[in-house]
Amino acid sequence: MNAKNKAVFLDRDGVLNRELGDYVCRLEDFEVLDNFAALKELQDRGYLLIVATNQGGLAKGWYSEDTLSQMHQRLKDTYAPHGVKFTDIYYCPHHPNFTGACNCRKPQPGMLLRGIEQYNIDPSLSYFIGDRERDVEAGTAAGVTGILINSDQPISEVLNLIR
Image (cartoon, rainbow, N blue to C red; front, side, top):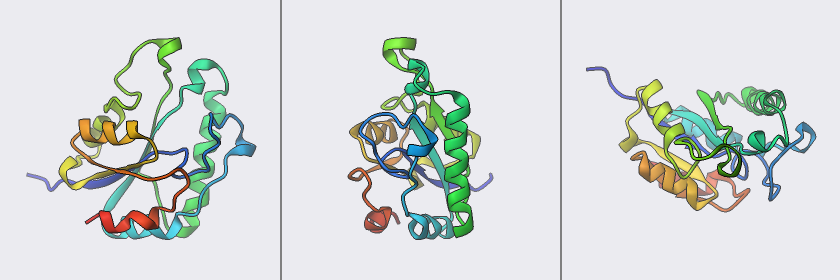
């Protein structure tokens, strides 16, 4: 039996980049928050770092997959010099008013379940840090401990909640 991995799942907007109150639609508006030391510590403690973000603006046509990809590349490129590597970035491109229901849009646990399956993760050893109640709900539905923070709150302030 292979040992399972543990992970910290992270919401994106308001956790890894500045919350704008609505969709981040342009690369120029994508401002990465300084959580470098906190995420490096989690990674050094053996946690995989996986982003799980609702991106309903895609379904609304407010930005393209290409723009979203550039934002995620900026996120990786900004964290890399600090020794932080994101294992994966999952996003839900759906919006209920445009594409109907799906199992990946938070509070549904689809993105987390996908990560758990793909990376052999033990949910009971894992966490989901988000700035919305729906993030905590998704974590709970996936068997992961949810940690609710305020938008743009430093992750370092909740490190004590992670064993």
